[in-house]
Length: 356
Image (cartoon, rainbow, N blue to C red):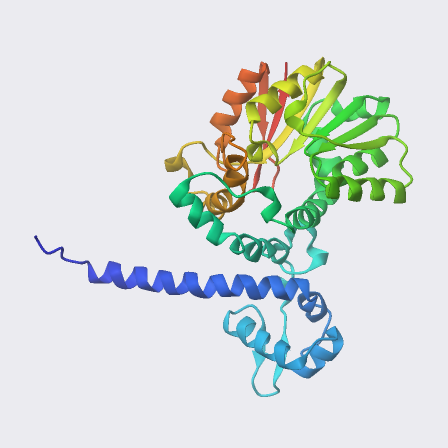
């Protein structure tokens, strides 16, 4: 065998890259803990403080807080004054780490790291035997998605997303029938129902837990024009009752996305709008090389999106099905006019405005 001569500089650089990945992986878990314990929120309101002062303010154990701060300081997330022994969260960092940041709170999203890690053994088995990991193995997924999507909906749904479809807001103000497919905890439906009292809204989801949360919120808000039903959206088949159907980051998870899209088309009136928000990416791997979130999204696809579909003997589209595949499936379902739009600041999603 001919010996392979290594490029030492390239090998050393890659070794450094791997060390960075290890550090970042652990920092992701620590950042999730900082979010869940409220430490980032507390630190953003405090002057430079000692570990004991921070622990007291957050009502947490000082020893754990001190070690956590060690991770945050060496990870260049929190600043440390070694002379005074005090810690400070810079406001520039707080803008990506606190609940006040709304959809800009990246610490919130890092909760998914530990959730996905819980199914690693199952995923390894799937690599060897095929099949998939069922949705039931993700007990906190509904809750975390609800928390993350609520921030986005609150900030953009009514004022930014719905106006992407020309004339849609005016139709909602006048009064139309609306359905949300895969509504989760129903926050989008409730926001729209509150903003447009002349329209009637219904949310469908197969999760009884999610539907229960959605109904509770609608009741708390006193909404009379919002309804929710436990339903497998693959069973949608018409008749055409709706003038607007929405689907927020759910089509790529479906076991039978073609069936779901056909059911949506059949349930939509001729002049209706299908607003489909899904991952912004290309169907071609080569075109995703410059995507700032590509490694994250391909990984999440393996650890959740693709595998929950395959667990039901589904198509396994995955999160990175991309705009080309999305347009292909939308055309196949019966949509003839498809506009793809983007929202400034949202690098996650593409916004498909589809009509029959």
